Image (cartoon, rainbow, N blue to C red; front, top):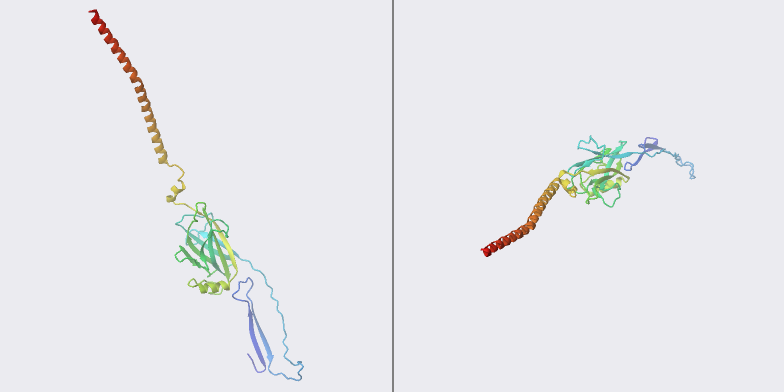
Amino acid sequence: ASDETHIMFINTIRNNDLDVVTRNYINITFVCRYPINYMVQQPNGENMIRVDVKTITLNTEDGNFSVSMLLYKDEDFEDKWTTVPSLTLDDNIYVKVLMIPAHLLLRVERCWATPTNDPYSNIQYTFIKDSCPVLSNEPLTVLKNGQGPEAMFRIQMFKFVGSSYKNVFLHCNVQICHNTPGVCQPNCSGEDNNGRMRRDVTTAHTVSYGPIRRRLLESDQPSLNSGVPSVETFALAGLLAVLLLITGVFGRLWLRTRRSYPAQETQLTLSNIHHNAERLEAKDTT
């Protein structure tokens, strides 16, 4: 800008909108005003334009924010779990990741699960990557991400392969963005947009939740108690024992009968011989 006597240069210093900051918003406007007409008398520079330079030192402070992960019992996200969740494989996990204070935007960058509380475990199941679902056919729905101070999604309960793994632990990398519309919200339709947004915000933080216990259905109970005999097994074993006892009793009676039968037969034979001898003696006498 200019008038009849002076030329003015106006500019504004702002903090970078694309960085993650924890200080107040900075907007400094300055004006440089120079006269149009100067009388040049000597080439020694005495009448050259002089610019006064003033250095402005701004006080900066580190800000703190808290990020939490909560689990809810239904899609209304009102009744949260206050005890260890116990879910079947047919149930959904309703997850909310929120930030305090709530004057910035939060975006979930990556979410994964481990069978232990170690987020760096060798066994990992990643279901959100680059702020989008890994698989399109995954039973996962991202309800809110990068639109406010909280992110929400639901995913069907799952289990890790192996009988020794009973629990599930969830972990998420989250990023904090400025509250500029469209800067933090992911676009899951293509990789280029996601890559650009990942370069805009590089500061990530990890938040975890667990354990989540797997509750067995009634149909799964027999496999769990396969080593314990059932009531029917005990009844069948008792019946077999009674049959064996009855068989043993009859067997012993039969053996006793067989042992006494030859003795009786011998006694009858001796009696017949004695009777025949008496008959012969009677004939000889006559």
